[in-house]
Length: 456
Image 1 (tube, one colour):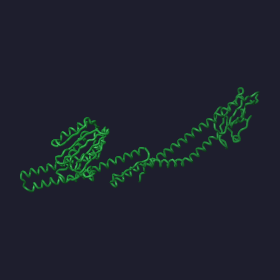
Image 2: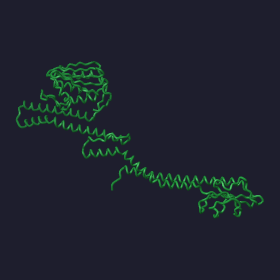
Image 3: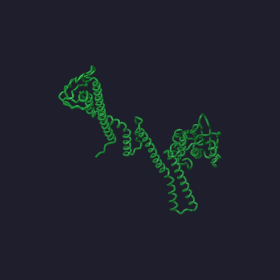
């Protein structure tokens, strides 16, 4: 048996609750209204009859009625009977003329007649020790009770229509409220069937919890998509770039196994394996760094950093290369930055200038605070980069001329540089003229990225 949806079950539940509440309210109103109307009628009957008692007396056995005695007042009939039950004064209402009701002193009670119900109240008015008269008040049961009954009957008849209307309106509201949840379900099903993480729910109207859930779901999908894309990219990059060093290592091992090598050849084979293994380790490290940046799984803790001290220290650590480095550093330049990441950025730029610059050429490293920003520039004396390739150098594994020179790396350095710049709220620019060298410049806001813990 197919289970009802949550929307249907909610509608049934609150409709049943509404029916129960309406029935309870009607019963309570009927009970209270009937009680109030009955009590009001009884009280008024007692007031009228008691007011007439003072106007009744017996003088020498003869009935005397005062001038203020009223036989009919606002629906209340007052009649006087003898001790034996004979009617002495007043006129009974026509439905009550055939009813024989015994006298009960001081008790108001209902009496049924052929044409309706009456309230009856009797009082004994004594005269002496043994004689007296009965004063009886009669009042027809208020039409208000019958009117109330009619209203309750009409309400009971109309109630199903109102409940049906409320149920339909409620179901429409529930469907509208659950629309983001339906969209989430449909999107999840589409992703599950098509394995397409690019599907999104999109902006939903309103500001309810389900709308917020839809937004969170989209952000979760976006993060998952980035994670899967980063994983795919890592797998593709690793398989592509590791193929060459692995092939070299296997070839060297096969050659060593197949042919007898002299000690010199064996040493050369070991150096080849060592060199390719180190290249693979560096490549894997760079790929992991790129993946972490793509996924945003690490937090870059930004703190106030003396950039002048950082750049000077890194230039002094370059060993033989340091002789060709020409630092031009403004003193006291500070920014909100992550020291290890900026060191990596600068090292990549220096390595890039060494690999692709002129052999033995000079490398200038400049740090300045200018026009509201901080600029860190690394310039070389290399052959430069053609204009049609200057936008491509930021792509992974792209090399302007991979055939030039010896070990040129994997082509990941500038991609990492650009991502580190973005982490710090900055940008990278390139100025290059073929034959006159290239200048890579990091532009940082003067205060640096002001949000500590930014993901990378």
